[in-house]
Image 1 (tube, one colour):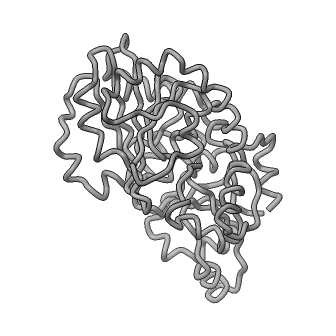
Image 2 (cartoon, rainbow, N blue to C red):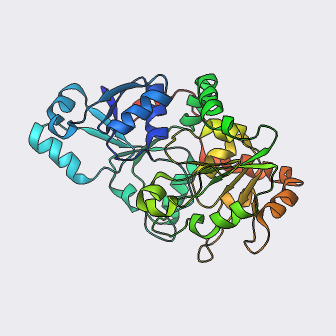
Image 3 (cartoon, helix red, strand yellow):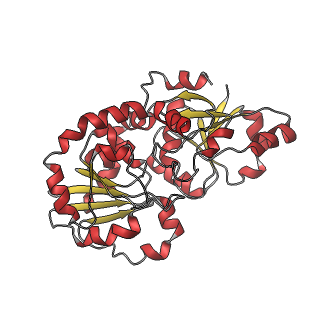
Length: 337
């Protein structure tokens, strides 16, 4: 199987998923956007980056060199039809999800799984979600938490980058809260617009805040972000920065909503806190920490929650095991497809 990974997205939302996969599988990563190619070369050691800005005119080159393509963007039936019609070749098209979350129950945002030729599942949880929604389960293999494996492989380099570019701008003696809200998706599940001002106003002097915004939040509403003072002491907005695991390991507490970053955080069993939109129910992930009442002082509530945070560790461990399978050989798992 001659395989390559693709990243054709104009923003960096997929980079922390497709880049580690490419490195671990030892396959090239073809990127069509210059900014994404630059970020990958800067932050992801071990990746064979090929920058093809004219990818749409080089499909023949792609077909002649490879028979299997992996991408985090959704494949559609027209892609298979295109390769078959223009080049008389049956290409294997594999979809790699960009994170595990609980999103998809209210809006049908998981329907695309039904028409994927082949899919990577992190673990059993995604299959359970598709079964709950009565969505046909495609041909698949379990790949586990390959992003955490990649982080462990290159931990020293990635931690050094985060120390220099993120934590050096914060007070070392402070505790650090990571706030990682999702984007304004089909479920309208982001908490960012409702609570960011309250969070910043209530921040005590002995806390740092890293606001890890979803790339689509900034892309879809740049004017909203332009009003934030980037010089506010011990507050750092991070949006053009794909790395997440070295931040998760160093943070003291996590605050989120339905973002897949919450599932990533389970690997470290840190204290977790959540906000949610009133129209949405609580999710599996929300059982792994304290749900905050937005009417209360957020940091006072988190201080109280930190005293009993250890009680959630068994729940965090159980959900992590369900969400991410244990995979001994990633390359073998891929070959099973």
